[in-house]
Image (cartoon, rainbow, N blue to C red; front, side, top):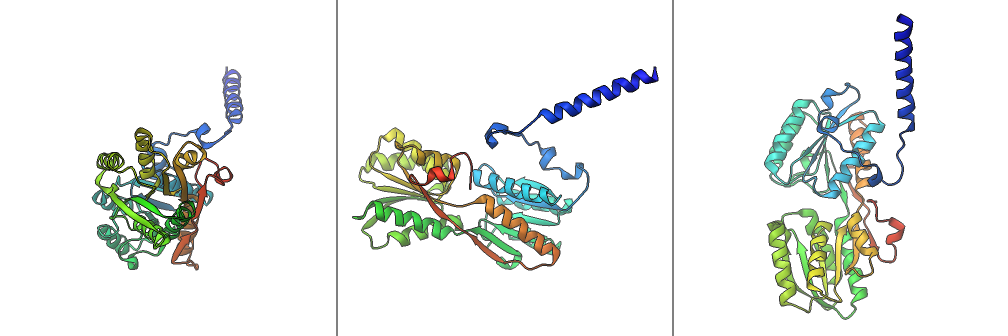
Length: 334
């Protein structure tokens, strides 16, 4: 009887090994979608306690940029045998402050912070400083850099500038521009500033400014009103790809012709639009959340190890347009 039980156990174990050996990841990340539960990613204390624990506090995980940034950080940390505790503030700074308190209680060794509000996040930064927990600030600079150990973000001003430079080439005689922006976002302000510097004194007039920070419904309403009342808009500059997607959707409805749309990010959705010759999407100032994530982990490790690191890093931004979009691909970020 004992021999039979042992035989059944060995057979089951061998079958399990065969099944696990047959599972392979093939194709693109979309072909191998993994649904990550809170237990897998947000409750590392339930896992085997090994390596360091890092907090990733995101302003808004519904933005694909922050999701990709998180994946890059997570992958780099796992290569070191470390863990990540992820929290999404959903654009609420009060939520973010409370979540950072939870991270401190969980005993994180360092925090990667994308602030929902550069100024109002200060109470959380003070709490982190009191707990002697290093902070690597990402994407948007906090109001007081004295409370963070390093800042890593895109060269946002250049991202906007190269969009403006391309517009000058495409419309050498100038024209009328609509700008979709978000004045409450320092990073988007830098992009718009760069864009306006590039088109300054080149014959362009800003016909309208639309604040995307008022919400999607208001943005769509104001865009529809703009395109219905003004048929002489030559180009639209968008502060990020989420804004650009809404502009493109409304332009489809309005059947607006001969208009150029610019943006900053470089998401798969916008690169797909660039590859579509019928789309008004002209170019995007591309940033790389993958490289930002890698640099963030490298910086945090150096800080914890007492090594040297750069306190401020601007990751390169570059133009992706119809001519080179195939080189970057449309199925992922760069």
